[in-house]
Image 1 (tube, rainbow over the protein chains, first blue to last red):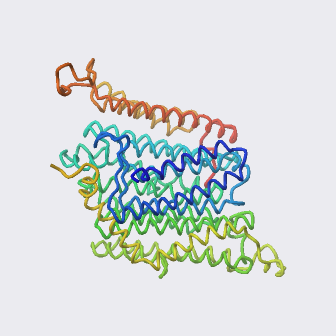
Image 2 (tube, rainbow over the protein chains, first blue to last red):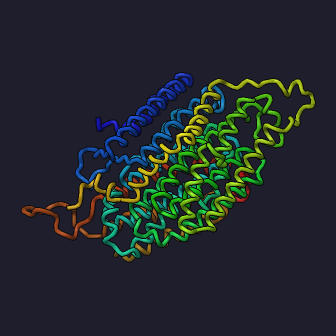
Image 3 (tube, each protein chain N blue to C red):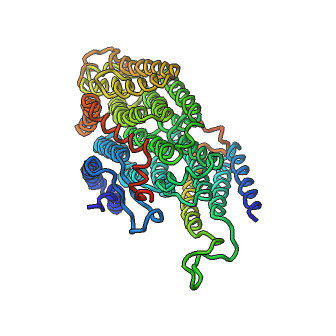
Length: 500
Length: 114
């Protein structure tokens, strides 16, 4: 059954090929797409349990002996990320079943492309080789480039050029880092790098480490490298931006965690103060950007940035509890943020635009949507017993334990501003009266949304609730994941065998 | 010879960044092209430069004797070139699209996201 470890990469590829060959039949494509994501979720659950029961899973492709071949390795961290992403992709795919993505875009290949994108994302989570990580990044980027420029609308093309340029720059930096690393150490296998890195002086490795951090930082959207994100994401249709916002930046965060724990952990004390400054600046500037916005998708895009700051803060402190809290935070954020985008998409679908000033009265016309929004928004802001509370509580407690009071204070303040901007959406879109009509009989009419949209949003809202109510279990898993990251010998020995 | 490669890669990097900072769309493309060449050069000399030393175990010997050109980095650079080629082809089309939509070569005329 070891072959199942590669299934999360192969399945989206096969689905994409099948969907491409059926490009004339959009309805068949969407059926295949949902089926494939459901199957992917099942496989991810299976792999997750396998990792829980049997420990780290390694697959040597082509049976090349370590460390020469490329290996697939699934540790608890990657299995959690895999599970969360497949649930997220499934719900986005269901959300866009009938509405939410223009029919023209579906004809031009929306379904095959999201599967290719997802293949790149899964590949990044599973691979045990840095060059392979680069290739997976490129697959993901290429699919996202094409998705982004599917429509000829001016604003969208102009957003796409910023996104593409910055990401090509990031790829160039990543590849340069790989070249320098290979020149110094003669390997690009993550486990092998982790073992050999101690033999070399830090000064020799600082350059590739920093280049890689910049490259992943651009992809994750940390300060001061995030400007492409609010320029390009809000131009996309909601289902697409939900997928991008939920997955792509998190892959950057995943890569940062992976290299700074397994590979460059010996250099961590050099960048520790810088990471704290970057994390705090990302949190503050992201949330301040969000506070002034009155357009839902722009507001949420700035929130992505702000939340990335919390994750980087966890990485900055590099203790088992901090890393575990950050992993919990990543999962929580994937569900809550994607669902907020989907709610934004549902609002856009029912009023035709995303300007908060032009909305109002949805608590009467869309009561169930209001509930779904409130769950995700309060979850994101961190109101107990929803997931965000535990994520922030654990993270800030660890930051306080490490006596970094200023950073903890900033994290708390940012959390307050997050609540403020979420309540702004609530007050403008749901609570206040609809500004367009004075005739209350029209306003109070219940608007019908497609059932598929409600199903997708309920799925993610349930995940947010469950993540909070079962916080204990989730945190235990996050602790296990953090343990492997903190004690890199577990990871290295699983790949290369115990050192002789 | 190694030093001249380093110098060349550095010049390519500088040129790439310089072009990226210009206001013209076409120069944006040049910047990306220069950067990808600079990076490919780094990959190329990451394995060390040895003339006429293929990675073949000579007859009778048990393993490779030291100075040899590492074939792996050449495989890496091939992959990188192919990926870069695809990206650049897409980028050229995208730039053409942007040019058609804003009607000028000036990057400052791009207004989205503000």
